Image (cartoon, rainbow, N blue to C red):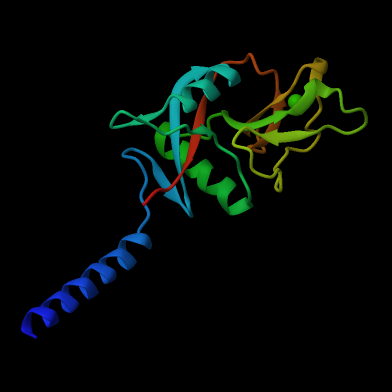
Length: 170
Ligand SMILES: [Ca+2]
């Protein structure tokens, strides 16, 4: 009987441990958690496609994280990302995020913007007069642009720092 009690207590303790750890999701080392996601500023200046590829190659202890350039879904999240960049560079440095124009502008009227992580394009933070597709080749989104420090569409070949995102994990 005593043994059974001990076993019951042990299993209760393990169940409790599971509950605690499931509410305590983690970010890889060096990444900053916001909500259910983890972000990392990448100082090395790259083109947008090179920056996205670099996020995809992110690893943690030899495990591929398959991160993407960051999507942004609220003004609070946009401000959080500005804070991440500011804390790393001391200023509001123009930085690639994961927004890009789908289908190379072949959608006709209006432009179709998507996030490279596949999430819904449900928030935008364009500067006034943007996105203006200056020169007809501005298909990637940069944050912290100009005096307004909002978003601008910019040619994807510009080299800039970037911010990656990955989901938290148990
Ligand atoms: Ca523009």
